[in-house]
Amino acid sequence: MHNGVISNSVINRLPRYYRFLGELKSLGMTRISSRELSERMGLTASQIRQDLNCFGGFGQQGYGYNIELLQSEIAKILGIDTKKTAILIGVGNLGKALTLHINFESKGFHLVGLFDSKESLVGQVIKNLPIRSVHDLDEFCRENRPQTAILCIPKDVAKGVTEQLIMLGIKGFWNFSHYDLRLENRDVVVENVHLGDSLMTLSYRLTNSNE
Amino acid sequence: MHNGVISNSVINRLPRYYRFLGELKSLGMTRISSRELSERMGLTASQIRQDLNCFGGFGQQGYGYNIELLQSEIAKILGIDTKKTAILIGVGNLGKALTLHINFESKGFHLVGLFDSKESLVGQVIKNLPIRSVHDLDEFCRENRPQTAILCIPKDVAKGVTEQLIMLGIKGFWNFSHYDLRLENRDVVVENVHLGDSLMTLSYRLTNSNE
DNA sequence: TAGATTGTTAATCGATTAACAATC
DNA sequence: TAGATTGTTAATCGATTAACAATC
Image (cartoon, rainbow over all chains, first blue to last red):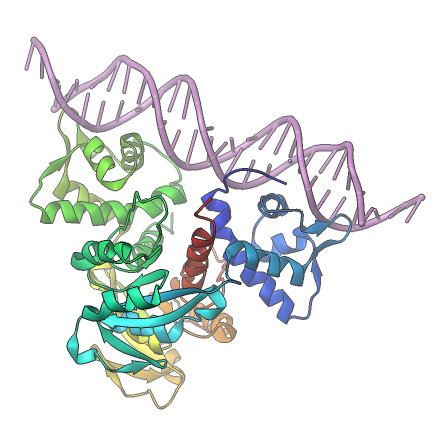
């Protein structure tokens, strides 16, 4: 088994392994070889074995991998077997869609609060959660100690809100604001999602594909 | 100037360069050196110069880069100066949020149609666009020839809808369904967005950060 | 046992960083 | 001109692929 720091490339592939294994499971399959998985996923068998061996020897020579076991091991590695509490700030179109659309529980999170600065939204209930005023953020966090925050707020307030939330003990950010959160803070982690960047990448590929 | 194929790593950084240059411009700046840009973006100056020189020599020795000029060059490279027509399939929470939330025009696209299979949604108007029935998809595409499709549909119909759309001449997919679109088709491009994968990555980092 | 397939080491490939001559 | 900073080549680093002995 590999020892030391795990590269981003490997980490980013883990959820995809998890997803594919789930599909194989629902297909009624119980075992798979790295070669067959590689064909289904469009990777090399070597890469799959290397990736998995960063965390342990989950396979068996001559047999392959047990799908159910491997999936549950990856769930443990991803930490999605332990629920982390999350609050969402900014219940506009995107915030609302994420609240309703994302299956937080199956991805290691438990959504416990919604916040918005727009008073007209306060009180509205989405997925059994009332939208609260951002003025109640401090009190709510001191009482409930949420661990993560989902930011669906405008870029110009992102930095301020982030700093406030770090003070209140937030340890992880899922950031959808048009702003690159970069925290030198060792024990706070960030996942930036830039949908606009993704769309521009598509534009590039469309523009430069017929060459 | 570099010649040959551009790596994915470079392509994925282009929208971020574009974004940062826009911010610098709105700050009233007119020029910047690779060193200063590198500090602001958290990259190395070497990498920035290498990246840009894949496409041309946009800088000037002793001076640096003209921000306005460089941004417009990157816009051209990304192809966002030429609008591509797009339709969106699946006007659920996510589809609706993308319709309202994404600034398509500034990212090289023009949204021209919304489609859903749910008859109760048909006729509703969002952002001046009426939601149409998927039964009208064929006719609409034959008449309007949209170039790209945004997929916000369930995983089990994703494959079928994609094949239909390719037949109808769609050349690019922005795919939000929980399904990995992989097309061997040389002249069709795909950008998969897996929000769930992103969230699981955050879970990993939260779980494995205090080590 | 023989066949299959892993875990792991070594080789290759590609991306990032460093260095510096060219030049504005 | 002198100073600054690019464009570009070379060196380094890291990730992917290939190979194969270990072993189920």
